Length: 311
Image 1 (cartoon, rainbow, N blue to C red):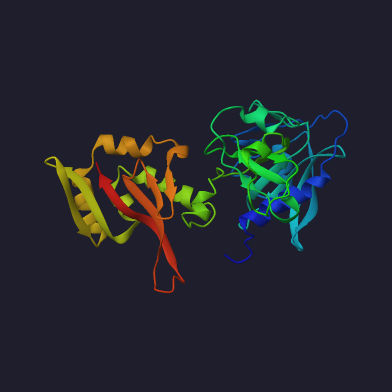
Image 2 (image 1 turned 90 degrees about the vertical axis):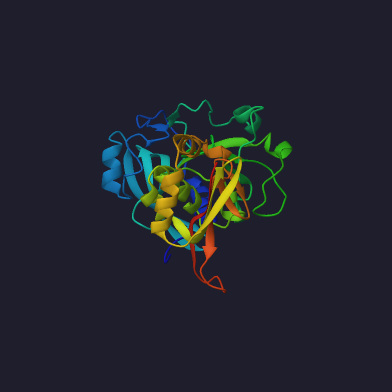
């Protein structure tokens, strides 16, 4: 998409611009960070200084600038008086891509505070899926607070390993929480892009559309990449039919649809989705989604539902 910066570049820009945030006096501008956003900033807020100022009436909002790999990056700086509190980065559509908070004036209810160690934030729970920084940000990693969250912790520490490579858990354990990062859409497991081959943000968004449409044969049919094989249980065995058009899919899928199947797909936690180089398997493989080449040279592709097993 023209003008669209890669995810890693935008992440690096967020971290590089963070040098603008310095400690200062006690702030009157003290917005609270939540899954919904920062104060009155939400997923529907445009990248517009006046609108953001209206959403944070106790704060000042000024235009700023940063760079990533030599490319200029427009930002908005949220301030308490003259003290920077947060940075707002645009996406390619005129909306907000992310908000970076590295000042103590920002409140949150996630149970972590700036200065905490990685091991103290995550304890002995399941290891989070983190994204390594690149270039000048290779000493930082971004870790969603939980699977499917819109908020991520940014940790910093010593690291001499290869660029774009995540340090081992033993190395990360002593890294320091230096910032919070919020995005209007949930942070994704990097395997959606690196392993399954989706564009950034595409895989989780498609999975969400599939969950919404799972009880509506006509809506799900529009997400299918044809031809597709539909399987179901019958007489203690398995039956399958090769489907090549939406009308046939609607008829066959609707005939075998059950409340149990719908619940299995809809109720699966985001973090439980199986991701590999074949795509992503929702609800233990009941529905597979993947990007599919449309020609021998793979110059174009379409992402959609590629298999359904109604067990």
